[in-house]
Picture 1 (tube, one colour):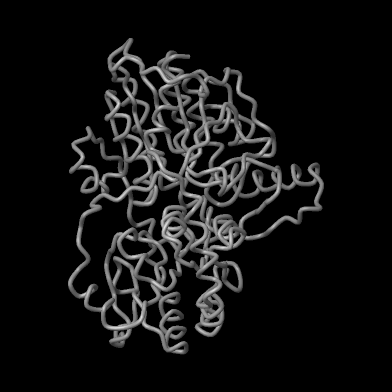
Picture 2 (cartoon, one colour; picture 1 turned 180 degrees about the horizontal axis):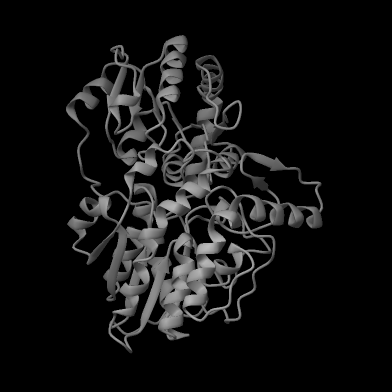
Length: 446
């Protein structure tokens, strides 16, 4: 769950696990309603799953923020745009480690409210599976109250979004030592829920539940994690092993890496820049981040201190210094799959999509986390030997060019590159997205 908080108890499903059964294609009349929110990094994994389900003969409806329509249109998937207030991108608390969840929650409620009437309007009697982002699960439960035969699957993009009290345990940016006993960890999560999550979300959730004849939840985790008939991880076990208290039944998936235009050529100016000197460093802080001016100032100072060339990736040119030297190239957007093989290093915010692409490319990465799941992703990158983490000096703070330069220099060592390259072998062959679609099909047979 964004904000780094998770519930304090082990969730046990009342429904039997069936995802290990032999794959038998369900009737092609099955309707899959796929719902996601957030940035392009949240969109692409769900879009990949939606396309895989359609390829397997299912009817698919795709619901996502309306600004992502240009990504969905070329696929010809039936698309319903959900309202999105892009003013939230300028909220100073959006990238705060403890207040960020509240910003995201409030911003997504108008979109989530559209899910219930959409599902209610589907043809009665049609077999239907709702594949939802975790923040849509309270509304998914309302849909099932109105449509009792509805099956619900939750797709978790990152390990931090799943509940656990086991190690490694992070509360926002703070690591809980491994020696802290389970009882104290459960108490810590109860405190985190009461302090950061429930005051923001619980009143609205319970008002909607009672309006649909459901009992009020005592904490938001009660209205989220017991809801799915199947939980699916969109990351592999080698990145985050299954914890004893993760929801069951649980299907382990893989990174559903998706490129909306995989054959697009690099821009001529980018190709010329890459050919003009040694492999550059690249810096990004997320496509949805409009508050990275200090980060890019530090990046400029760091690469100039190191005497290295760099590429700055952001769709928001106003965040960058106005007088970039010839050794630094700005690009609005470049598919990471095409760019990473040409880089010496990637410095980024720790979004799970960016993290996974760099792991697959074997590119050393320096993660500069801000909020949400980014601290946990950064910790896992470092544990794999694929890079390092450089959190801000304080909550909501910024890094200096000097600190950034020191961290970058450590990762520009040939041994660091070898360790990052070794992680590539963990990516297996086969079609991971098709395999996950097959896992979702089991819901139709149960």
